[in-house]
Image (cartoon, rainbow, N blue to C red):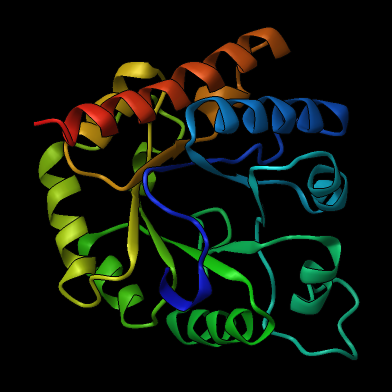
Length: 237
């Protein structure tokens, strides 16, 4: 895999954000771990900072990611997130440039380089096709292409955006994997994206905004099953 990345397509990303805390995060991570094993689908689990170590120690198959980090070095930085500390906590990678934590391009470039230095896999968010192309020039491992206005709405990207944004990345560097996100809420949304040619998709609110753990667990299994079934059907064509 590109730059030491052990994640392989098809894969899926789940981000609890601040919808869940404490034991709820761990319970979802365990469900994701079980679904990953059952369907042989890699899952990136972007956990809150406070749960990185506990989730990592309790799971076997999922890839535990931090939701952000700063490009600082050991020393001063009271409230900053030190890359070496993210690694020490057990994270395998880091998400950067989410619309809720955007970075200027120069700072994003610096932060990706720091992640490379400490051995963290990078998954970087991009809104437009132009931004996806610009981010691709920074050589992250994975780019999340998702229009920010659709995040959390339950409305998925249309196929023209999916195709154009993927092409914007692959034209720069075909080794960068592309995750098509935004508005993923059910089995059918996942199946549609993967069958259409995506390497990955993912969700936050589509799973974590459900009211009970049982509902979240069922949706996790449904979505990961959709990844596997769509990928297999696509490769039988």
